[in-house]
Amino acid sequence: MSQAGPLDPFSTTNMSIPASGPLRKRVAWMGIVGNLFLFSWLIKAQNHWNLWALSVVVGAVVLFLCGYVYRFSFGHLMPMNWQVLAVGLGAGSILAGATHLTFPWIERWFPAWIPQLGELYQDLQAPPGVLAALPILAFLVFCEELLWRGLLYDLVSGKGPPWLVVVLCGLIFPIPHLLTGYWVLALAAFCLGLFCATLRHISGTVTVPFLTHLVWNLWVMVVFPVVPS
Image (cartoon, rainbow, N blue to C red; front, side, top):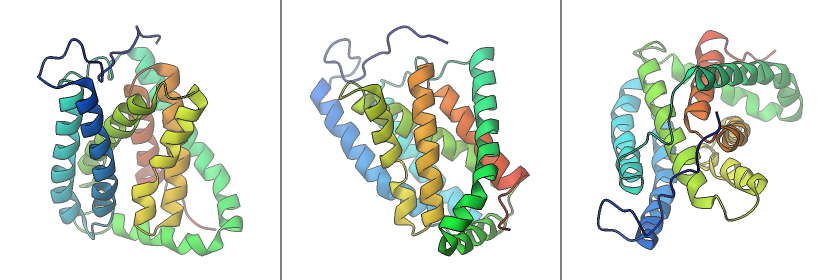
């Protein structure tokens, strides 16, 4: 899965639209900050109908922002082949298994957070139902990965050693979830963010963390929910 050196979207050369590298960086950072609040607003949606409508708005913002920075060319970020597919699906399944194995420890250490989990699953059952939410889920996961493991990762990449880049991405990703007041969701987002940022570093693609994130969500939210003991 080794890739050629990634395209630097913030380079001042080889731009197809009239904008300088520094301008792209400023726009990218403003977009990151703005989307921290947009995703928080989205996560607070009370039912799937609201979630669907808000997803269109937030998704359009993310796609336009990333399209501007990457010149509407995502091929270098999201290649697809059997290796990428296998790693992404496998990593998502392994992470789901690890979630179930470690959940008893979460119950023991943070018992006050557990009722929030019930609220989250109750929200998933809100009309029109969990199956109708699957397209929303896939779309949001795609936007999240393009933004956090694509744009954010490229912004902070090169600012320090790879482990620091991974940790920074892991720390920023939970912020929208934390703003909702769901601490258990923020903890899950932090662990997921670290894992997916590590996969971005290793694979050099956004496809692997996207598939991992999507499969993990399907396992723990739909197929095999995490149930308090």
